[in-house]
Image 1: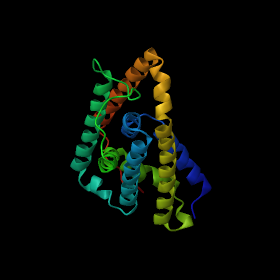
Image 2: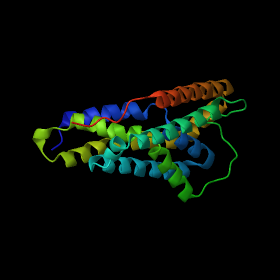
Image 3: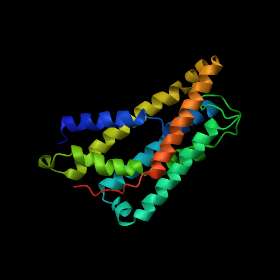
Image 4: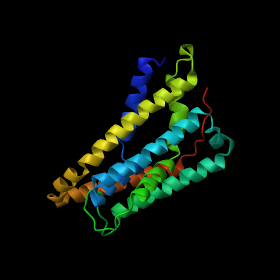
Length: 215
């Protein structure tokens, strides 16, 4: 049985993580604005599957690949950093636009939306490391069935992340209209988010830590 304190602890950490701007949030907002809420929800489905892949991988022990082959971890980490840098440049470059600014762009098919949502999540190895290092801290060995506890606690993180992201998807249109009526706010939002993404990209790229073995 999972301890209530463990559920609460994971939920609080998950809430803090999902409220921090990152690739998932940027992608979901941009799709919701440019293609509508339905596209945002479909994209969120891909993100959800990405969470499940990492959850199952870490709890079934497949995440030891990152430990056994650190070069693979570095490659995935750098790919994620490059993607963050691209998003930052898109926001900060001359003529760049905010993710909340409506754009005229081709609509992607549901299949492509789902796939891009999935890949956006899978390109962030920190998710796997989060499961590998965070979840074990809230598992009570005396409660038995460590695998089940890990899956339950990981599911708590997924529920929190999807709930918050779904709220963002549904509210993106309203936020866009609000900011569109205030051009200066839109510029400030763009610069702040671009700067945050740039700093995050540098932080990820410069991070020399390796995946740690869980106890």
